[in-house]
Image (cartoon, rainbow, N blue to C red; front, top):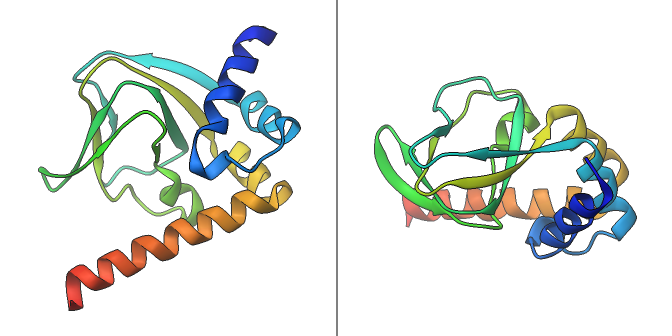
Length: 143
């Protein structure tokens, strides 16, 4: 990957909540261990029940998140998807299907683990995101 694309990817990541407080050097670390992928509209990015080996950041485009065939959310540019499976080695909890052509940053398990170990702000944000998710599920369930 040449420098220009790394820089533009780093700039993209800076606009994403999970990465917004990272230094340029830290973001460079994440990007260095990641790759970009472009997928056509209609492609299944992630399938429910699969083992997950990668997390994704949507850089451009949008996707639909489905659980048991029902739409539960939309994932737009800036969304981070698939990180749960990397944290606990569990199966994918939902399927994600590209609505439009999407450009993704693919973050390998190793890259995410590296980021969690070396970039404290990422661990904090992931924990906060997980806590928010748990509260939302809790509210949906118990009111």
